[in-house]
Image 1 (cartoon, helix red, strand yellow):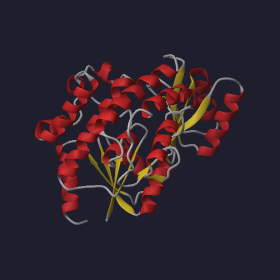
Image 2 (cartoon, one colour):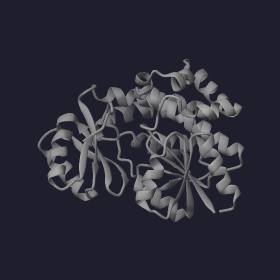
Image 3 (tube, one colour):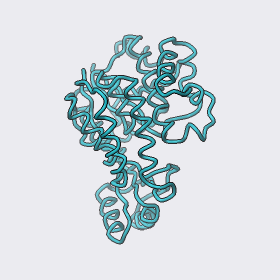
Image 4 (cartoon, helix red, strand yellow):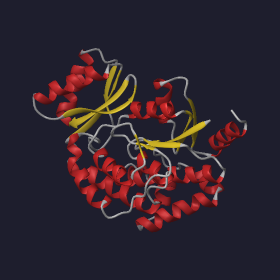
Length: 313
């Protein structure tokens, strides 16, 4: 039975995430201590005490989720549960690369801290927006976004999360216009998201350029197991290809449906969401109901997942 570990992206954060694992496992405390030492401030206190508005800042959210996810992974590893293939949604790709041995945790946490800052600074606050579109085909969404963009501004389909759920991003006015057009075209819902920047749109190109400079200064190893890249939905192990994919990822759509299908084609029948929340489990159900999904974010979910594998299912 092949296992896939999938790692959540921004939006999964909450004050208190993985606190019971932190209290129960010294290996989790070591991960948080390493993050604190690397960043030069107490990410641990921010994760467990807040305030929420600070945790929600992109430059804090990204290292916080990476740290929580890596802590969950190391508990699974200590329990003898290891993946055959990994992937992560947006930010989660960095967690996946840590799990695959391609990135050191310290380099990853420093990089995503910078990544969050670069993405926030690429577009002035209030000038960009994102919206979730439900119940409309991807080709129609792309067609409408292209038509709206031709009138001025930028709006693009950026997250292909699952059938019936696609996220658009761009300049605020263009996104608002697209919402109106998408609803008129039959979308069940099209709602603005509470985010601080138009992530994964072409407006993030300045962030990608700055990120390239940071990635040029760190060592990326060949992945010990396949990592499925957001930008093309393909399995990668080559270090140079991985680095290039990370640079492109900042200003390119997340092809999560393609990633999931690639994992299935690899032969993985069980997906374990490693980190806070159950967002990716939800996507899995909509992509293919035959996927068996587990999640590990606390003691209860860890015990359930361990029991599943120990039962030989």
